[in-house]
Length: 385
Ligand code: 3PG
Image 1 (cartoon, rainbow, N blue to C red):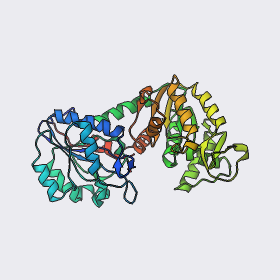
Image 2: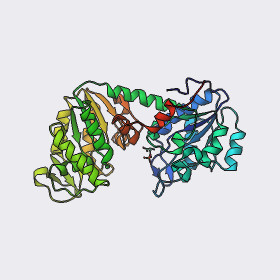
Image 3: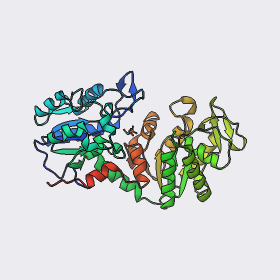
Image 4: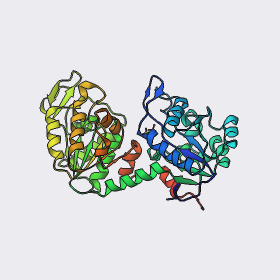
């Protein structure tokens, strides 16, 4: 796989896909690790004397955090220590003019790519976005591993495609996760089901994991398969239900389910006496059991919170189990969904982990053995240098 370190980028015009997707508070983006890491890539590209055009997204159409990247440019400028000019467009005349007048070391950020239907086109190469920008660039750099699972125009539409610093780091980190010692434990929760269930399935099927500790909606769906009458809704329910059934019938001895759950009032119920209601966290007996199990693991992969950790009433499971993981002797990895946000909320140093991925869905898909469209494009890109 060719990377930004394999080619001469002096005075070259680069289109660089980064990931600035973050939490929006009062209309403004909150700095996260992705900003910090991409700013390091940008600094390196500036040193290489390149002209740098950044593209990124924020939110999804129809959602509250689907906003312009205007403020993101300001945040990024501070981190890079150099003005990053925001151009409010993607392929309009003003964008083309700005690119034509760029000098080496200049950095510009274009508008949220998801503001344009071109981003979701089935024929990326035929979009105005690609047709306009492709002739103006020398290389496309995919720096954001976290979007490599999306077959969207800003990820797979441009060539020659090469890997950026952040993407290379992620691949190196994930390689370590794959080849770690047994007993190998996956601790998985979160509010979605499809990705965690696929992850559990693939890690058990290929013998990577020996034990799975569950929380969040994932645990509730698996408990339903065990016959518990729980009030839990999930999209793609049928597909997930059959995968959950399969997991519980094949791997019952390897999947650990909660012993108690917390309801909306913060009250704990043992699983042998559950009311038909919604649950938001694991209870104290489960926490105790999980802490005990963690002691015997040689490798732990932590993926997604175990409850609705954003609310004080439901933070206990995530806080205590994540802390126990951070203090144990096993090799530790974390990634997927809100995992990093939760670690930071509970002031758990990321340095305690052997590797922390910046990616959500891309991390889970990759660990599950899926081929990521963004990586495929780099692999098969015709890069002659
Ligand atoms: C993420 O936040 O995981 C990435 O930015 C991908 O976002 P998406 O799930 O909206 O494609």
